[in-house]
Length: 204
Image: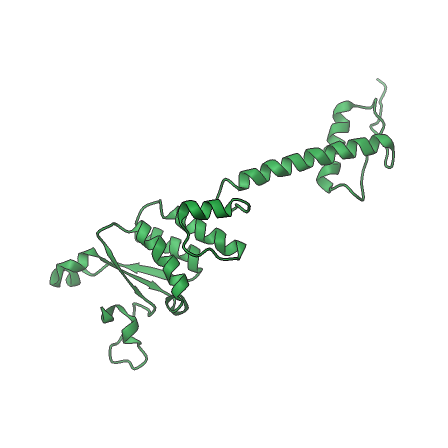
């Protein structure tokens, strides 16, 4: 059986690698009846069509990215309006993180979920603490309280803390009050001169 080798373009100075790949696939589908060595008119025709196919695929992929807040670019403003981001940042990665945190806010109000949402915005450690049984027994109103600890730099950044609070308010039950602190919740001593007592839940 005779063998007819395919002669296809291998490279181009003006067409992307994806365009060249699509051009070669297209040439393979056409078969050996079309000879398209580099620098030929047939090669130029295949490369132009291949680049068009590559651009179409990239457009479809980009359109799919716009459907998700954490990958969107052109529709970020629309997503921020939908999720009511209070003060959108100018940084793309920060804006995406803030939106991703707000999408997580729809997944329930378990403390671990709240922590994950906070970390999506602030990018730092956080914790959500519910009052101890002994505290609730002594003062039943504390059953409706959560203590949210964030890093000190987040606590002192009013704009960033406002974004954290916006997400927490969406996630927590409506009847629960949130108290914020920037001081670690473990190993706290009220007689410690460096304890920043006015920055803790003891100030409430």
